[in-house]
Amino acid sequence: MGKGDKKTKRGKIWRGTYGNSRKRKKTKVSKPVTKKEVKEAVEAVVEEAKAAKKKTAEKKETAKKTTTKKTASKKTTAKKSTSKESKEEGEE
Image (cartoon, rainbow, N blue to C red; front, side, top):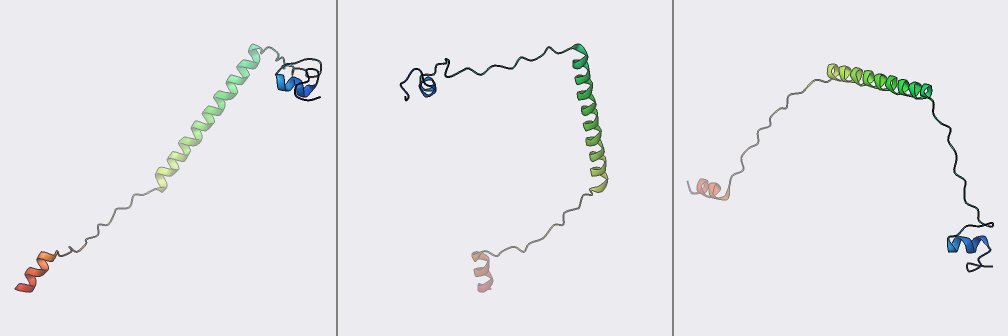
């Protein structure tokens, strides 16, 4: 009663076969779709797209109004003196 047994479920799994002790799963049968259902589904998707587009447009408008650009202030840094310049200053 193990993997090699042809009649047990474990043996069927091991061999990759089907039979009375290991049934195949039945596939679900879907009902045909009517034209009316298709139209309703398309209309719903179109309405969702319009609503999403409207929301993004509103977000963009509010974002433009609230954001202001700040001017970057430039910082000036002092030049570092090189060793040659410091030697020349010492000689003078």
